Length: 93
Image (tube, rainbow, N blue to C red):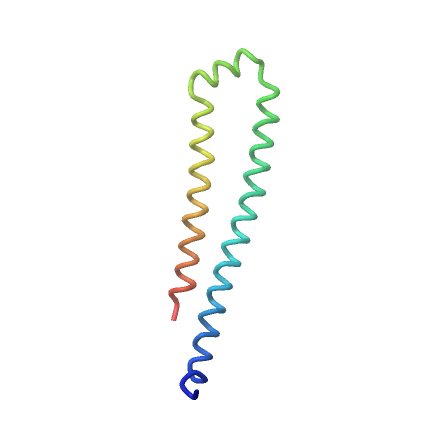
């Protein structure tokens, strides 16, 4: 029983670090989701102002693919940085 009582502070710090890391990751993800949503809304607003012929030319030249790659890249970077923060918080002694 004394052994478990001695390990309790260690478990509390580990659990605290895990909860803090997941909280940091969740806040980062939610903030990024809001930011990307606003960015997509602005792009849709700008696209609606472009003449239809130019918009078709944009899509035929691969503009839609470029936008998909851009959004995928931003999502990857934020996820990667969030996971690296998670591992550094959990890996600290």
